[in-house]
Length: 623
Image (cartoon, rainbow, N blue to C red; front, top):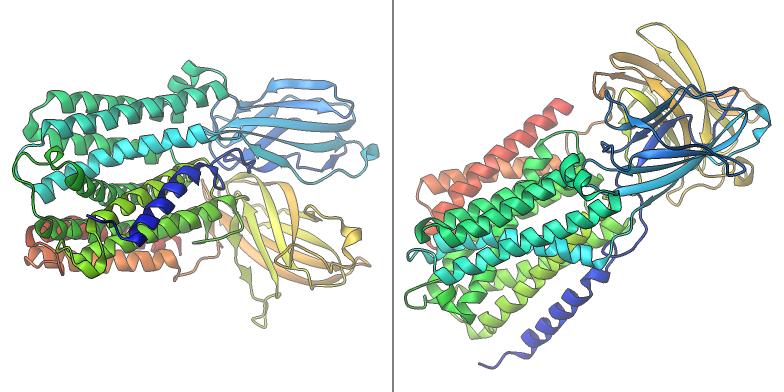
């Protein structure tokens, strides 16, 4: 069969993309901000104190592991005052604390290093503070870097994904699409090999991470991420062994169970685990499992062209029967993958697609390849296995689709090593209108990280607010009646060089910060941001109010009823209910086979109803 020119060209382009993908943004040694980022500290960066603090307290964006989590304290002349010190606060897994300090006057630099309990990545950074009036002005910024990742690490994760996704996806394909008896021994051996490769790749990546952390045994046994990686490796290896030993009649179930268990452990050690609620974890599991059904299905379809005996012990099945069955699974799984992908992107980054971060750029490239693969799948769907000449060669399209999704998986592995955001988002607090119902234009406030304890308050103004001499923050504790006045400092820019506040960030805003603000649990605050003139007079003010519970800000946050998460919940709920109804009624999807349609509609419909309802309930409780 002669391969059409466009199909050959697409094959070449997909192969080139597969080869160069490890060099794309976020896949190799790009220095990016840390996964466990420093979000607040006491003393704050650039602060000058009258006397020695009694403790150093550093607050990070993710929970910390005791391995490779410490700090060094050095004086301005480079003399080491403290080295490899600090303990994780037993009451706050996000805090690194050094107590019982008694430091002489001078300027000190704090160099910290962390190991994230969420994804196992190490990071380091430095900031300065001073003691005594004669220390002079200090930079208010912190320098943070994430440990560099190389292409072999991305390839290791890619191999992990392929083994797990193939085990689940191909097993579902054999059970729902082939449906002609036990799983052939050749397929069992191939899936077992994939699981063994996944187990080995996972273990190698874990060992490299452990060496980076300092101790293989301590990392694999004593840390959350190391334990998850070790468990994933063991599960994949045991699944491979079981596939070779169990009866052929239950091999599909064993492969699917091993793949799904590995996927759960994979998601639990990813970025989603850093979010405070468990729901995003379940959504991410559905996202990856849906991708497994889709990707495993098209991989198995290609195997039917290349070596049919891998999947069936009888006569080679006709594509006019196979493609309508696979199309039913693909339609539902791709729909779930798309919706859960939107939810995951929004919850992790606060946006859908952005070119402003390495993660965003890599995600855009991944999405483009995924859309290309879906477009090829759409052509196969309309072809329906009838080998329509005007659509070109089905075999060539499937080949290119498989290569394209291989690139998607490689870019997914790259995203696993890249922080979703460059700056940790705080909790936005809504302004309170004055007696005339007005609020100060171009002024907003957020609290980072927005938990009880040490926080950093960031007030953002528009650069066009000329004539500002400074901002002052008034914090009134409603519970005990105390009031604190805190000066807000310009973040990362020189006040005198701004030409009357005529310059700012690229988006035309200016950030003013107050570091080391202690907000206790179960407290209520009435806050005023006072805009001062250059002569020290108050020009205007804006009120904010919020309250903290035991774990986070519970009153006063900025919330919106309608956002992408609301849309995803609605589509999942309505689409899932419709799918359940159609499946129970015996309906079939257009151009799809009846039995496969019913399986896809019932499974996808139940998943959609459960996820959509859970997302909707969570959304209502956060309003």
